[in-house]
Amino acid sequence: QQPVQSPQAVILREGEDAVINCSSSKALYSVHWYRQKHGEAPVFLMILLKGGEQKGHEKISASFNEKKQQSSLYLTASQLSYSGTYFCGTHNDYKLSFGAGTTVTVRA
Amino acid sequence: DAGVTQSPTHLIKTRGQQVTLRCSPKSGHDTVSWYQQALGQGPQFIFQYYEEEERQRGNFPDRFSGHQFPNYSSELNVNALLLGDSALYLCASSLVGSSYEQYFGPGTRLTVT
Image 1 (cartoon, one colour):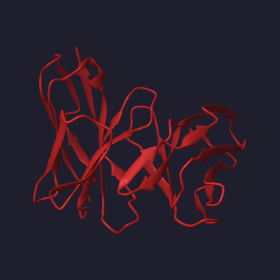
Image 2 (tube, rainbow over the protein chains, first blue to last red):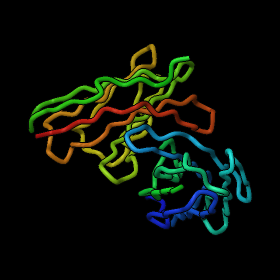
Image 3 (cartoon, one colour):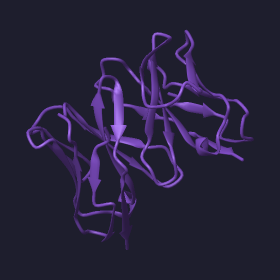
Image 4 (cartoon, rainbow over the protein chains, first blue to last red):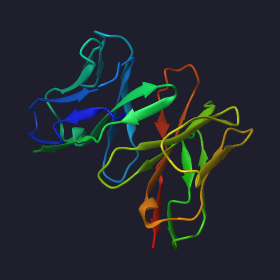
């Protein structure tokens, strides 16, 4: 079953922060985050494997709450290059299921 | 170090025809997964190949089949094409045991008319 992402879209000015949430009705063992720019392939950002784990990629970080079956992606001091669609993915039995995505637009 | 490559880039087919898409994984990777991405949607898992066998399959009909070769490259075949098969088909490679960090290719845009 697909994870659910929110919000569907967010518009930011450079330097602003945003949070993208990902939740699942099934137990989560790992959460994957990818970013896809228009017309390009999804690019791996990070994997969180354990509850409570936090990771960072540039000024993008994520947390994983295993008990709540949720993960959040934090965009801090956003840059123009952060624009794109962010997907969370949940992994189960070799299958990676992606959410519908959150489109982030960062404006100057 | 070559990344994941896919061919062709674009393809236009007619309903009822058959199509074959190709993927070469990133150097050193042994696992290939295929995804279908409709416009405005997230990638949907079709199947994964490892050691030349289909290891897992998503909710796609038998019209979708695949193959992995000894050099780890892979093909996706779709028979009896429907209009709804129009989408971006993505191939992703990974290394077994690497927590399934996947590297995606640029995709093949399939249009069925």
